[in-house]
Image 1 (spheres, rainbow, N blue to C red):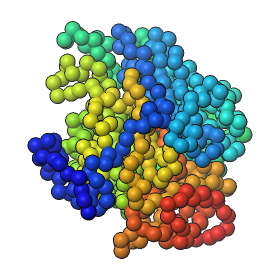
Image 2: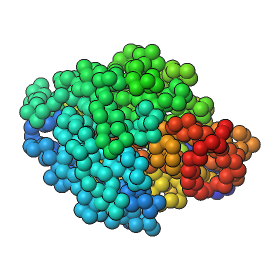
Image 3: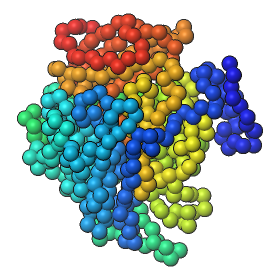
Image 4: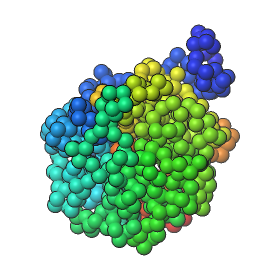
Length: 564
């Protein structure tokens, strides 16, 4: 095949030179010209004009450093992913003077701002949020994490929402950053876990007087605060069960992100919390309404040297196809890849995976597992950016704005950075904060939506993924929660003579303060059909589908009594 190549070795960073042969092999195998960008910024075409505002001030309030999350949500049930972007606002009042923005997907690659008609211009100083059908009525509801009172919006089913946080019992006055819906008690409705950050007020600030410059205070200057778990009562309301469930590590908590997944394959949803400068939590579900923090036993609380990292975002996925879900954590230090070593234990695999050196120079905020090239292996995208805006005056080796990174899974347990070939977006540094993945144009591959602090958000369309085969699965629970959150799907294929099994779990939340598409995406390579799809629903129902066609959205409804 013809490969467009007009490059000199001296034009590449050192990290690229050593892997050039591998990369060229990758490009040829995917039948992609090296001149073809992997991702393209389509803001102008799509009509996306969102610009985050932190309320940056001379007072240097800590909340200004955070940025905000983004949520992919099909709020009107038309089969198209809509975009919800959280904004922050005015630090003098702790309010959002500009409001969040909802973009309705028109189809055809364009969006329309429908914030006002939907009633979603929330004026809280926004951090992030998550979405799910909490009341099992067939449409998606929305939780928003704010500095101050959080918001909870019920979908009215007519394109509009009603704010009902007080009505349903969501009372969280703390500095919330993120949330995740899960059915922790397996009763068929969705509960809500909220991640809180610091005990902080707007009178708190710091001057770094060593260089006569004003900078932001370090998070260790403030006490952490407890996270919260709200149990769904099944009648549209929630009860705070944080204390009785055992998820309140108040002194050690500085939560930034959360992901719920079944890490030990016992079919009970567990919870992982990424904390900034304190050990991370891994709450094992005991199956009796309580959790035990197993982070030290499982090896996920600290890095391999026993140091608590400045963790910002987290995602889970089975990157090595062994049927056990692994973790990628974005930190102010190197990223940390925790390989699930099965039966309740993890091994830090950062160095062996080739992720230590290329991530060392950046502050990672939000990581995501996804198969961008449909070769059946989960790749990694990382959003980077420093929280301290004067870091360049304080340290010669650090920058405030940083480039984002794309890592290709080589299928042998290691990753290769391919940012150089990913598109023009990757050439420019941004103050990155959050990312979500989903197929907004329904062409079969995963696109990305990135939010930056005090900068525009970017919609990045995948340009190459659908050149290989794929499968998109949406679950509809009947006995389990309607979104199928916590359900696990296994896809078995034969690709180029090799039998491959992929495992994924429907989840809410993850990344940093954000929510990706809850539909499950599987890259299938050159496989011409799917031999078997096995669904283990959250409440125990099991289903099998055989000989499914490729390149389709498959909507699977829960069927009781099908057996193994």
